[in-house]
Every structure is written in C-alpha cells, then in structure tokens.
Length: 146
Image (cartoon, rainbow, N blue to C red; front, top):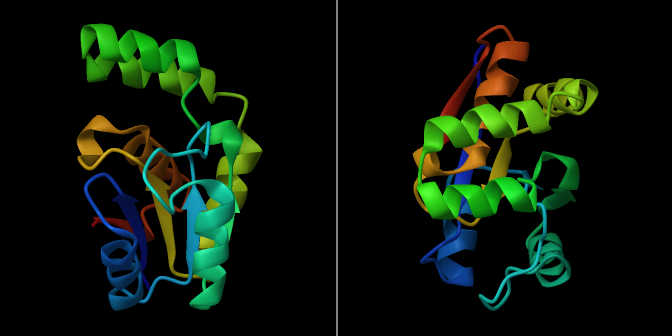
C-alpha cells in the first residue's frame, strides 16, 4: 500500500489556515526541516509551533540536520539557480543517510508532513528531502504538496 508524505510551506498562511490544512489531510506528525526553526511570522517558531500542534493532538519533530546550510541558502538567494542549489544541498546532506532512512520509516508508520517556509515546493529543499524519502521507500510513498 502506498503511503502519503505531505509537504507544506507556511509562507502566506495564518496559524488557523495552517492547522486546517494539516487536520483536513489527516496529518499526524509535522517534521520541521528548517535549519533554524525561528520565524518572524507569529506562531511558527519552534516552541510556539510545537505547543500549538500538541494542543490539537499532533506530534512535532525538528530535524536540524536536514535544514539548508546558511552558505547554500545565501548562494541561492544571489543566483536563484535551483539546480545548483539542489546539487549543493544533496552534497551537504550526504552524511545524513541514517537520518533519511529513519525518516522514511516514520513516514511509513504515520501520516507525516515535511514543513518549511517557502510556499512553492519546487523552490524549497523540502522537495529534495521528500524525493530522498521516496527513493528509500522504493516508491511506496507518494508526495503530496499542500
């Protein structure tokens, strides 16, 4: 049976809109893949977000090691080349094989959602993480971008 892996960027969403998307899609666990889980947007910094998610019965996990290193983020802001970004990001997480394997198992066991800021998945590292999880699950997981 093919499992769903959701991805979501909270850019442009209110806390209530975010929670509704999560709940409407049956998501049970949020996996925050931001390098720095802080946000200028109210309610989306790690401790506040985790608290809010726990209040509505959801799990939260932050995996810092899958966040984009600062130098790669800054380079992408300057050149906007996502193909180059992807190459650099994959190199940066090349030592995270066990983390990605563990994440693949979690996705197989529960309805999970990878969380980051960027609204457009094709411009965010979470799509790269999602693809790596699908590879490890031998295509028994499908990606659903919210």
